[in-house]
Length: 611
Image 1 (cartoon, rainbow, N blue to C red):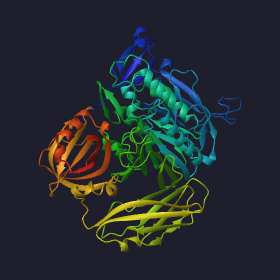
Image 2: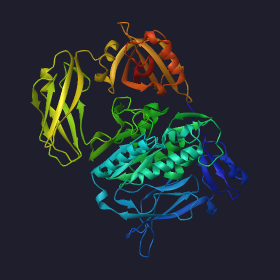
Image 3: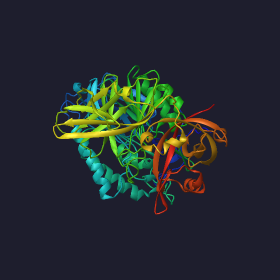
Image 4: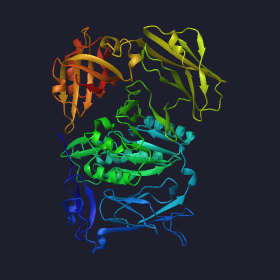
């Protein structure tokens, strides 16, 4: 079922649009003031005879960067200015004109300028001047940014210290900018207005130490109070209002170097149900925004992976004419997805598994460093608190005997020690050297000969880097096979090989349980078995699934990610299903302590192949 949210305008007695909303309700203050609410009809222009239907302003060159338009400072032409529903471009004098609609007026900061005033203003503000300072060094093909996601900030001091540590490290890296891709606070959607505000205050205090510009996206846990036990919809700060108070628009764009950067908001909430979709009014804005940047390479940021959107294909089609790389969070696992040849980096969480330990893919809490060199994009998942770290980025867990692959490792060192050598060992055997390529933030090492030493079956590969302080290693496990399918009975015994990686499996559905916590969303727990009679638990969080896909005895092929969830992370119904089928699950899939379940190893569904 497809749902399109209606957009409403809250209008005062003078006929001015105060704000727009997807919720057909006003707050108490608006009701008491005698405001009215009407559906927003696109394509109907306000009367030009009434000036209060228009927002007029200017974008100017703030040469002395004092945030004020001084005598002699002139306007800047061709700067995009938006109210979130339509876009205007400044004329040769820097002036713009927009309908008086939406929450904010905001600019797309050009690649050769930096803001000296806020880049957004409330639509009710009388000061509608935006200051920019000419910054030609920003207009470059080479720059670095950090993506950090899922902070889940709360009031616990230990958790705050971990976020502080991440910020301290990022400051030393000194990226050109930072993007925080949502879930800034713990569980704002289940919290009271007062509790969520406390967490937002803590978060803004923590990031005040950031030395570089930080851009934000809205996460599902940043929608305040929508699932709280009491109805607080009439209180200031409800839903997206508190996020807007702290960080402004929930979708917008900016330019950096040769790239056009886009922030999207797929979080929709209608009729007390939550779902993920880029709504029609945002798509209208996006199309208009892209029309001013034809041919630009794109960096696109949002919280929920696009796979979970109801209209993923529609949105991806808008990006196909551009070189596009996307970045998201939400899943608390670090994985690279291929969406119709548009790659999307889902980043691991800054809080790990919601402050319960490492992320479900067995990676410690961290953030991602991204280096841009033209259309060459490289990145490194950095674990918080780790001064020396090796990431083995190839091969994956399964090596096909008929294909040649490189052993490739990234070596990160926070200090100035010179990397002296990098070697690898197969199954603890003799050491072989790897070729080193120096980099600014991390070095690369590779070998094309390692595969000659591998036979069918499972192996351990150890990569060892040495600097003047000593040796530090990274160990991975791989399987050599001519079959691209992983038998279900091998996953648990070889979990360290597959955890956090996309693998392909095949099996028959023995039972499935459907949940619909969100509107039009199929959330399922599926029990599958393979030819050996061994089984696994698969979690599906996918809009595209149908009841026919999940019928009993269906033979399915799927791409999945083996992960571990703590027991408390499962829903009540999921726990009941797993408990009821306890003796049908493979040994080791449920981790216990003193006969009590502590965690479960599951398969996270990425793609289902329909035979």
